[in-house]
Length: 437
Image (tube, rainbow, N blue to C red; front, side, top):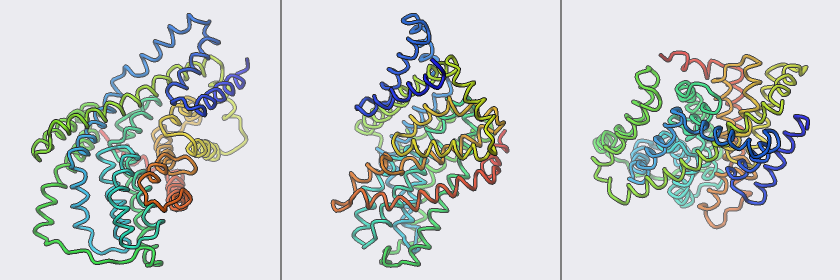
């Protein structure tokens, strides 16, 4: 079988299994089993598959994944995250599109706590959407910002997807966690700028309303009690990684421990919070790790079939500018983002893309973070972006999928603009990681 026939058979089999409803992890395992049986000498090849599965998850690099997820779960179920949003609301003032701006700001805060887009969309959608509807906000100005806010969870450290991407790509977890900071903040600023300009041009879509003023003394007290401590934990994690004082794994362990201490000091660390937080973190961590088990075997099958060498050679010989090749690769990720979730996209594309990245001598951190923005956009890309369906489940009863799709479009375009800036000006991504010790 030629390499392209093997690759086509692999993806057709994977697509069929996913269409009939099998989970991504199980579908990937089954097609890997078929590939191993065909290429590695039948049943005896399964021993190598077991070793590949073991090596793919028995790595120190992945330890921060369950740590950061547990940290976010405890902050979420103990109410720390909700209290932070309330404090932000006190300081926001009377900007145009106030609640929409609050959604972006709260999404950035939740991103530092949860690292998961769908969790952020679910929480903000259930709390802010009814409030926006009550004040007469247009659907595009209520649903759209909440969808955009969820994506910030992927682009602001600690990001679970960034660790997974670095692990699969074999590059620095610390550098990619630091590298996503500037693009994440740029995305938040672009979204807020768009909301304010649109609210001023079309005030009927985000009507002004009276918000009671909170005395400055109370705002300062609440910020000191409920905003500064959790933010300090996140800043400390980033600082430890940036200055090389601790590895991402050590920083994650310290941050998780301090989160438990903070919940205890707030008198929120009870049995219910522990059970829900640990249970949620365990389920999510296991799901991610199961998906990762297919990565090593898939990479080895690609190499053994000759697909890796052939694709790399083909990319090198294409009569196009290397940047056009990069754009084509990102278009493939965009297309996949319409149908499958981010971790699965990483699992499928990184073993194919990474040899091309090395052949073209691109900085893998730069490429990885551009891909992170693309993966962030996948959560809100019609027709099957996962955040779109989360939003449908919590939106007002008269909201259609068409309303949600239309609300997502401006923020998809903002993401594409950010990707263009990152491609045109690589220092946007690389400046901060290059300052690390």
